[in-house]
Length: 230
Ligand SMILES: [Zn+2]
Ligand SMILES: [Zn+2]
Image 1 (cartoon, rainbow, N blue to C red):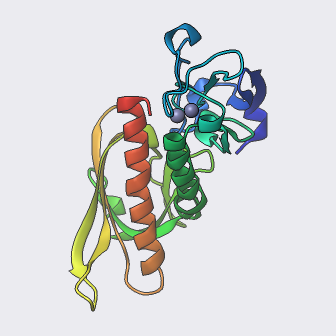
Image 2 (cartoon, helix red, strand yellow):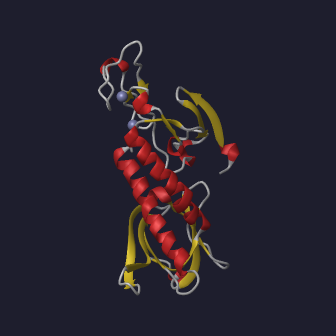
Image 3 (cartoon, protein in one colour):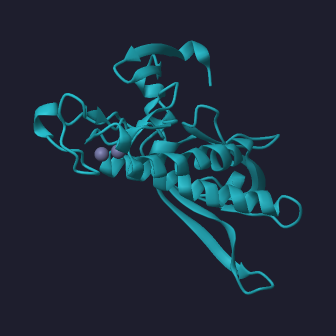
């Protein structure tokens, strides 16, 4: 990620690395929750221990609810809220954030590394049945589809409206195997487009299959963040 486009900001929970221009935010970014005001919580949400001078309130940085120190002492990385260092989590939220760390470690790496696909795009017959590399940009905002001779319009991740894994195969044990991905998105003119990425045979097949599975997870994560704010 381009360092110059970001700035270090100190807030009550620690340092955050925030894009100078909000438009440049990663689509995986989550808003920090509003903290439940101290006056509204007399007991720890988890163990029901009453707060007093010795049993102090602590807020989980992910859900914003009040916990005692014991129930909220786990420090976990929370890159989706742009924290530089690990921050306090309650038990439930730390499970979610740890799972997400796995997503960034494995799936996002797969997406930015890219996969090879035979591409069919609505309204672009030039691209039909040609092999392209599809990859997620390093700032996670754009899907780039290109080969040596052409580059299709970049797809904004937040403009993807629908993702479906295509299955037309099963392996030797009878498990269904992904053969590709269909995606609906709005292009830069606001028109709805359909693009189909088919995993090629041969060496690139495995990488293509992990890429489509990762893409489906990424879409779900962005979609959930937009509908629930979580
Ligand atoms: Zn507690
Ligand atoms: Zn929490």
